[in-house]
Amino acid sequence: MDGGYDLQVEPWIPVLLLSGQRERLGLRDVFKRAHEIDELEVPVPPAAAGLLRILAAITARIAGHGEEGKSRLDDPDVAEEIEDWLALRERVLRAGRFDPDAVDAYFDRDDLAGRFDLFDPARPFLQDPRLRQECVDAKGVPNTSGVNKLVLGRPTGVNGAVLFGHFTDTAPVPVPAAEAAWHLIAQLYYGPSGQCTPRRSSGKRIGNSTAGPLRKSISYFPWGPDLFTTLLLAVPSPQVDVDWEMEDTCPWETDLGDPLGPLPPLTWPGRMLTGRFRHAALLVPSPDGRMVTDAYLTWATHEPPHEVHDPFLILDRREDGGFQPRVADGARALWRDLDSLLLKDNRQNALRPPALEHLPRDLLPRLRVRAYGFDQDGQQKDRVWFKATSPQVLQWLEENDAEMAHHIKRCHVAAEETGKRLDFAARVAWKLATDTSADPSPKAKIKLDPKNPGPWAAAALTQYWPAAEAEFWRLTKSGPTTHRVTRAFVDAALAALDEAIGQAGRADIRVARARNRARNLLMALLQPSTPG
Image 1 (cartoon, rainbow, N blue to C red):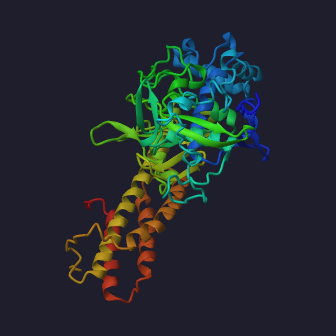
Image 2: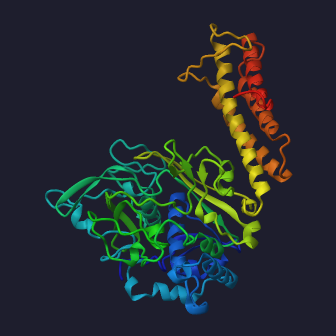
Image 3: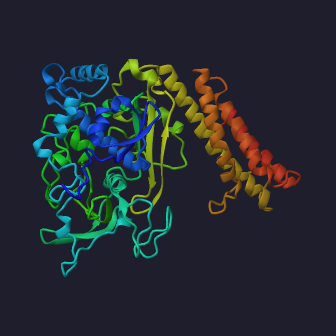
């Protein structure tokens, strides 16, 4: 089709091959060459996190085709027994690659004709063509959202901040179709809540949306030695809190639903991975289909979302006893989440991602963890996105190496407790050094002003966390031990404290006393009987 952009064949997914070469591939070649691919290199981490869920859903449709009985990983009959499902996955893993005929058989399905085209007039990929008629003003003029609203990081509105480039709504710059596909995926998974382009449906005109299913979250994927392995391990186990017996469809495999109607049942694995969007979108292409010049972004539903433990999220316990996804923090390194990934339930207040269950034992020494996070608030503000990859840590899963998993826990707890104490100690030091009314005696209680923490705490923590990470990995190399774990982090904190205070002039008697008080607060962590 002229002016189309078929994601099956267009080179829109950047990859790094095991050979070291970089290429861009369409969906068909991503699957046919997955065993040759080392890395997805989509430069927008929230798009990569969404794309991996889409690829995992398609993997379930093709993996196993050609095996005994031609069963697939999404076959409900296989899913009845987890052992049968794991055995099928193991057979596919041993094959070493996806069956090219199975890949073609899926993408050549008659009911999917045009469904992977970004600009198909009837059913563009992951979009709702009804928005052309439903997002209009009172005179019937199209009310688009603008291409800047589509592209994460661009400013929108008259007073939008310039973050990643000089783009304005008065002179919008078109975006290449490949990049538009990335941002479309990111918007559907991480889109904001609040005011949006109004949409009229069944006579009702509504102009607000609810947050995307992954907003402000961080995703953790088991990362294999090649993309083929990574995708197979990304297909969630059927033993999840969704229906795996009902017919399962992804958005591109089914008809458009009523935006004001009830949500369809949450089924495994496709709808769980790709069918929980809260936003609707429609891209406006250039005449040649190479660029996106405008876009509609609006609400898709206001029904309460289905409750489900996304297979790639850590859940943290709330004060009311329920659980919520761990919030992404651009300043938090991946190693600080390892115990929540390795322990079955973290033994206290976190549930690890289901994707880390039932991993093949023989692969564990070769598996890493890939994290994709998007630091956002719950409504409109986007701060920073990030990705991180661990070393081969999944060999330390509790069911494989319980001693090491609990050692990781001890190290992390010691690091966090020391970090909190360092923050407190540095604030106390600043108070004593600058407030002449503060009692400098060692046992005197210090009342801190939360609005005036002083500069030392932030400076000390900036020094501490990289040093703590180095100590953490050193302690993992030395193996499980209860000796000197806390001492290692306290030493790092003492050095960070000295570095933070050092610029203030150590000859000053008040500074010297403040520094000594802060050091004693840190050293108290080495005394087990000392409270707090």
